[in-house]
Image (cartoon, rainbow, N blue to C red; front, side, top):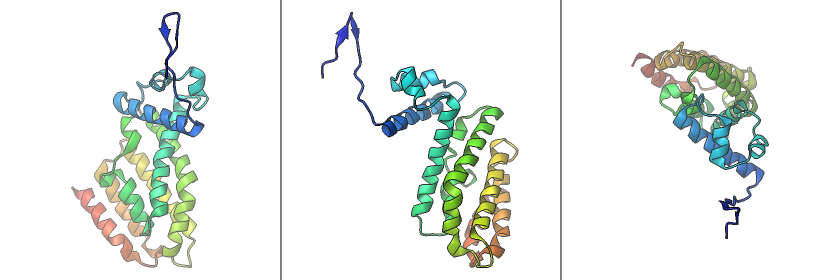
Length: 214
């Protein structure tokens, strides 16, 4: 393709992408910038330039940096939900195996946040994404594992509520990984009366207890 030149200025021709593809491109560039510079030092203008978009083109997809953060967190949770949906094993084990930073998993974009204000924004985004993408799915997956005298949706909600508490404590710096793992182990043991087969939790609890004393 010939790149046209007007008044000595070379004009770059960008491939026109579908809306979803452009949105994905923006988030990929934003994620790389934030990983390199940190969230605080990454501005919308940086993202725009990295994507070679007009301001209108960028703001058509995301109206603010907070909206970009919301979308990045949403992507992380959707990835976790995809793994959970496709899994055929004990659902809590799946969530911990792929999503628990105190078990050595990638913490994701939260690692690039530097202030309490940013971390609180992240936690707010995470709570919304959990409610939207994980709550109903976990309830469905838990159904086969919960005693019929209990509501699987309530048990799933209890697990996610405790998980958010652990996230908040760890992300805000109140707990280290060992403390978070210890509380997670205790919380899982508290779920045993609801389960058809409590032994499903034993290996997970043992692993968390090892982390809590390491």
